[in-house]
Image (cartoon, rainbow, N blue to C red; front, side):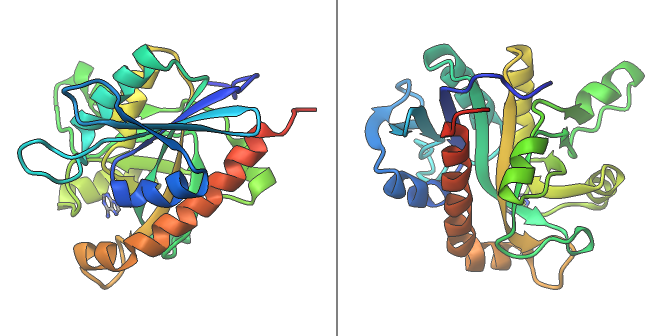
Length: 244
Ligand code: ADE
């Protein structure tokens, strides 16, 4: 899918409050409350110059009281955003696992339009295999990456912070640079609507490194979220510049 020609309005989807707060504070976004009660997604809005910016955070699970990470809240949130806000471009912003063998480092930020894959949907029935894996390419980000000095690459999503051997071989088969828990779910909804989607993902942990993922994730969440917010501000400023 090509880069959208005119972008006057973007919506950013974050899974975790801690990932989103640095950007919400820097842009002084207004807290608009719940996007669609009784669902837990929170809505913030504001602007960068002439660019309207909506931020959606998945919110707290009503039973467990923690951030709604993972694919199903992400898909529901995307549908609600498209119904209620209809932005020109969706941006999935958040953290990810990176890969040393692909140049990943803690705090590195990727900007990518796909491909967005799932690595934990195993359906060995021939017509369903491609559907299970996904592989959506939903935005041409070449010019933006060039202007901002960012790298792109494949994102692979699943509902676990760790991975089993089968997940690992699927992740490897598509040369994944960012392992996350939302992007492919958002991509599926975006694709049904023919809506462009890109992802901006900051590395909290190195999947092929020596440290346990959950420990690295907790240690680097705030550093990575600050790096994410720096890059998002640059990206939003770039989108706000008039195109030649
Ligand atoms: N988010 C941050 N690190 C991650 C990882 N290793 N896997 C999935 N989602 C993540």
